[in-house]
Length: 299
Image 1 (cartoon, rainbow, N blue to C red):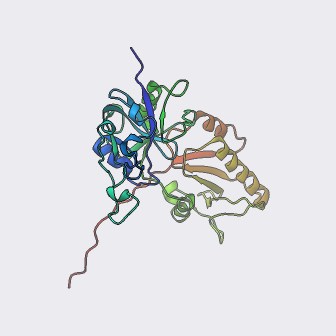
Image 2: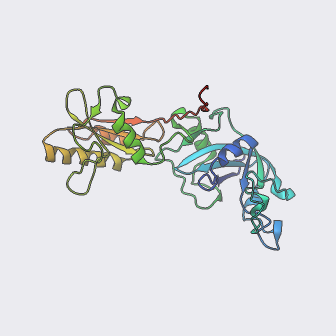
Image 3: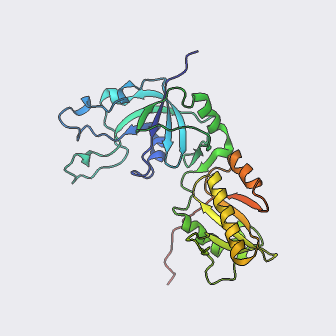
C-alpha cells in the first residue's frame, strides 16, 4: 500500500482571525495570493506547490502555538479551474486588487473526523517531543518528519485536545485573574498578606507571577504560562521558591498554570518530581466566555 502524499499548510489565524472556522465549515483550505494582484500573469503565477496538490493527497492544517487543526483528504483542487471564491470579503474601495476579497484560491477537502474533534473550536496541541519544524506557508512533508500515522495518533489522543480560542491573550491577564480569585485555582488558597500580590520582587530583577497563601499559612508561588509547560518552566519555578526562602525564610510550594494540552510531557513531570524539598503541582486552565444580549429597562 502506497503512503499518501502529505502536505502541511499554515492557517493564517493571526492575519485572518476565524479563518480556521471558515475552512472547517466550507471543507476547504485556501491560499491568499490573489490573481488580481499577481500582475499580468494572473492565474499562471500560482505559488509553488499549490498546483501539485491532487485528489487523494492529505493536508494537515497547522495553527500558531504548535497546534494543528485536522487532516483533510483532497477532493478537488479548484485552483486548476481558476476559480476565485473568497472566504473573506474585500474592500470595494481598495485599488490594490484586494477589493475582490481574500483567501479565494480553494482546495476542497474532506476532514477526518472519526478520531478527531467534530467541532471547529477544538484543536490539537502538539506534544513537546513532536518534531514539526517545517518552514513556509505550504510544505510537502517528507521523511523523517512525522508520518501520517503519527499525526493521526496525536489527533486521536483526547488529552491533546484544547480549545481554539479559550486562552488568555497574555500571561499577565491570567495571573491577574488568579490573584483576584485564588480559590478558583485550588480550594484553600488566599491572597498573600502583602501590598503587592502579583510580581513579588526577589532581589535580582526576577518576579513571581502570583504569590498566594494556603490554609496552613505557607506561601504558594504560582507561575503562569500560555502554552504547554517545559522543563525550563519547572526550573524557573524552583528558582523562585529558593529565592523566596532566602528572602523570607519560608518554604513555599509551587503551582505551574498553563494553557496547553492537559497531557504534560514526561520530562516535565520527572523534573517536577525530582526537585528536592519542593512540592510542585501543574494545572491546565480552561477559559470559558459567554455573551448575552443586553436589554433596556422597562419604563
